Length: 475
Image 1 (spheres, rainbow, N blue to C red):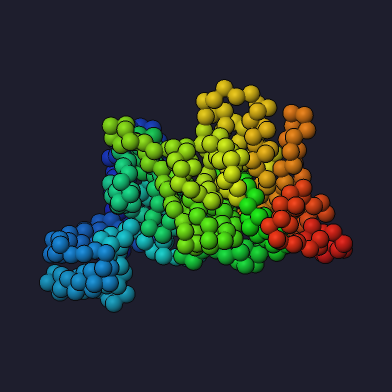
Image 2: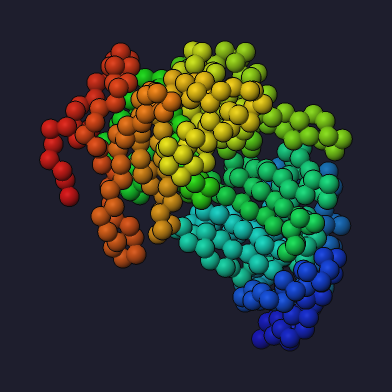
């Protein structure tokens, strides 16, 4: 039996005591202790406490002390080779006997601490995982194929989680501390990150990473996943090319995997390459492939409370940058009014997303967010702005089986009295369940939208069969 196995087996009993003292040493008081007492312990298959933990820390600290501080860490391959050589040298000097798999495992853990995001690095490299949730140092969950799973990954303590969070937010010029205990950020590949720390989190630092696939999801993949039908794709492509204003709506849970942001990415790929596109986001996530793209990102206030740049500031400024298309990652407040103004003053073909459960609710939310701009406008005036600015609402929904589907594509027809009229063009028809999966299809309602003249003016001719006209239903 190798030294590492003997260490782990011999220290299995003492590790739990070390973990509880770590958890209680965070200064959170009796409330945190009682919360932890009621929780089920994480399914740790390989304890990282006691002598094994000491071994890892000792080798890691010695390796760090011998690394050249002036080394360019952006040259990952060269740095990893240097770390490998020093690692082998330190093991030889310390007379540490490990089997080849154990040596490789220890090296990967240390290299991830130095070059990556520590225990999260293997999860980030797993393409089957769509979301990572860290609830304190000892509870880590992932989402895979729409389902949540607990994984046997742990951090040393709260400080270890904080070091990983700082490593994410520091390069972006953002900060997280007791005075600003939550932050939105992103990884280099565009994956969305949210972090919350004590005192507003009672379970220690909480980190949520919504991963983006390395290769952006294509429209063919969405059709293959059953998220949308080919007829609806042809219709949406025509709407984008004809410069209609589109609102993508969905609940907060529908933005994962193939959700609102993914659908916005796919729909923006229909924009012609010869147009100037401005994207405005809290954390830059959109992955547009066009050549002429300007990406703007909001900025939180600094430690003195100054220097904040809001989405609304960026929307107002974008109007002076000669945009042909404005894409706002998500409307959450007063910027919605400025977005509607832009749509109504010549910036056709703009797109944005909003949180809502139905197309009708999304327009109600847009009205509410317009009022958040602080303008004392009558509701009818706002509704007239909404009905004339937004042409199409595309509703995205997360189903019970974890899949994401476009459930409704609705035209905003206009006003009748004080009510905005809407017409469903495509509706998802649920036909049953098969092997735990929802079976159904996004079907046309048989109604042609009133803005068909805009599509035809753009030189695009859609066959009537797209709208279910002149065809028998297929089952």
